[in-house]
Image (cartoon, rainbow, N blue to C red; front, top):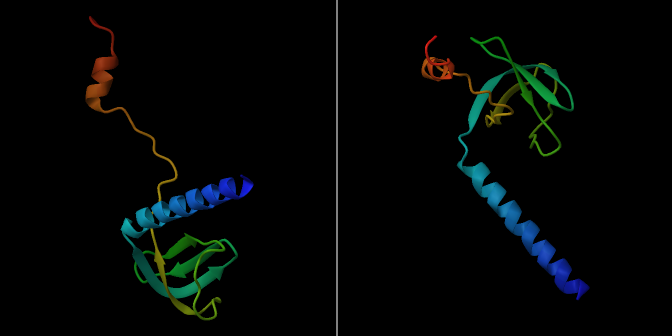
Length: 102
């Protein structure tokens, strides 16, 4: 019985990972190229020609090819991810919120 439960859990985890990978594959990729200005375990800062410095988060799953160090010219491929969204009231929403007659 325990083996059956374990097999079901493994199958569920594999299915969840496949769904996550599928959604990630559909998300548009971007890239930035330039010399590395700063590098830590959690970020890479790349100097660009027009926009100044771009700070990009990285983690243990970030694939690094070659020696990542300050001064190295790199091309960083990344995806944009929303971390918070605040919806602001528009003009129509403000008008509806006012009490009638005022």
